[in-house]
Length: 289
Image 1: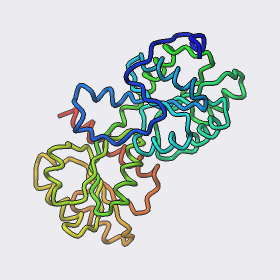
Image 2 (image 1 turned 90 degrees about the vertical axis):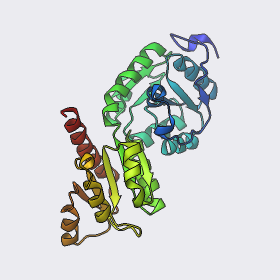
Image 3 (image 1 turned 90 degrees about the horizontal axis):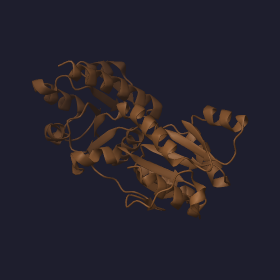
């Protein structure tokens, strides 16, 4: 591998981790000064391991936290564990074609995806547009220009990084909602015990609470009433989740001051849209206070 692969090169950064799957990390455990670094997480996929290492090192010099992958399944698994702020995909391989196909049909990820390729023609660029790619860079890569594009797209996308507290006694649903909302760029805290809700609100400061209706220790309606007893929390949006389809019970839940009632199973995109709209409204209200 030579320096000529890129129009701009750099020494390998300490922030680069190649061929690795990241673990979950709680936002409260990250120092405030480091949270922007968390938001700058960039995944790179290339079936060419040497090329992936070189590009990861070069891009890591521009203050991005870069994790590179040359195994497609590890790349896919990493996205479910911790969604990146942006992804760069080398599409010049069979694996690259499969990776971009997966990104084009994704429903639980909203981070920007940028393609890189040695092929420069209108048909491939048009296909990239139709697949939702936010950029198309030709090899040899101008790494500085790529970094600028990534920063631009991340900045545009961070408006959706709402803080969502999910309350459900079912671990499966907690994991599902965490994966869906995290992959949409939101910061998620999960809570299985609704009796701990006030402490969780105090520590996490959510911009929306997503809660199951039926829980053994304290049901969602009771929990919502406890929350609304505190004047500091009366404006936090509360969205109920349940398999309950009876309209009268749904209306009863809404009378507690809830903002929406979603029925399980919920389509991921509908969930993201509903949460985003209400969290954004709450955020705007807070700005005007």
